Length: 555
Image (cartoon, rainbow, N blue to C red):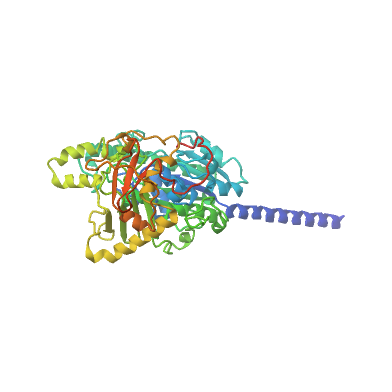
């Protein structure tokens, strides 16, 4: 009897030990597959947070998050508007390669995203808030909360639905996107604000700045709600959180619709308890396209094995991005030597003429190429309405302000900046003989990137409408609904099909703009070859068979 009792006790002890081992293994497996949360602001300049040095705006929750994790001070978006930025952030592909390069766009059919890969590997995937991507087959997430990004009861339900399944949640806020009417009123006194040096200081600017800061405070409150949910559900230690500020605000020189640093530099925080040193900083160059490979590697998936479904111009099917997971342990580790960005004007609300921009940046210098410098850059966002109209009124008696405003509309073909001594990019060094070697080096890097992406420059710009579902017809104030730019001669239509052996050759070609012979299509004349390229005849950058355009996600 005694021996039976001892045997039973021994068997029970073995069973308990085995069960404990199984539980430990389960916990270890769960900790090896962290939950993933990506929080995206909407049109906020990277400088406009407490943790990045702004002393007026109130962001206590984001400041706390930064103190708990890694602040990445050299993250860059490859585009200057919401839709192409988000497509890059989710796919790990630069915008022109994926086809999602104008605003209100979609990727080529068959392109995959981090939602696809993580869902295929057992993750539960969702997006809450602003979508702005398509087609739905490329982004197979559950959309929670509908259009209400404050539906945090839906957030809690999603993250607690299953204790056994790791999850990816993208929280895409609508704040602080203009018209800045969602934030708390009266939080900031316009008269007491310090107006940033890139903005003109007047009463209208101060009032709008107070409203904008209020909406950043609203965003900060949302971050606080998300962190509280993680704490209350005891998932904070098992969740890798990344916050990004997106492209800049819609103030003139706030950054949006430009490739200056206010437009493409992104405030970024990474928190992952036990993996990231609290209060650390990294200056290593990284890009939005590096986020999907990072999430995959954190989830135990080898990014190098991924077929994105969208080859580049050389036939490579892997990511444009690379994992920055090593920065979490070694913030000083090198990542990229160069970062790149592009801006497409065709298709933007209120645009008047093509005005494509390309940029390359290293740790110190930035080179910008404006492909249609003879045109006037004019869109609805920064060139019309307030505050620009109040600035123009003040500029009647302020020649320095007048020159600054003119730069918003007219820029040279090349720009070069020493960001070490000229952080706000106001001293163009492109024509300075002392900087020609730097200009040529960066120009060559930009050529190589454009070639790899299948970027044809101006033809790519004019094909932008083909990448906008439901927007293929000329928009109000577009070239097709306006007279040609003053000073341009109408040209007879000639045969299409001009080709270039390099991006540099294409860019260096003189262009003129006019209407086609039927008066309805915007054309370009390639002078040396006497070839007119019309929007009707322009090929899409890369021909790929696609299904009929279906309803995308917020496109």
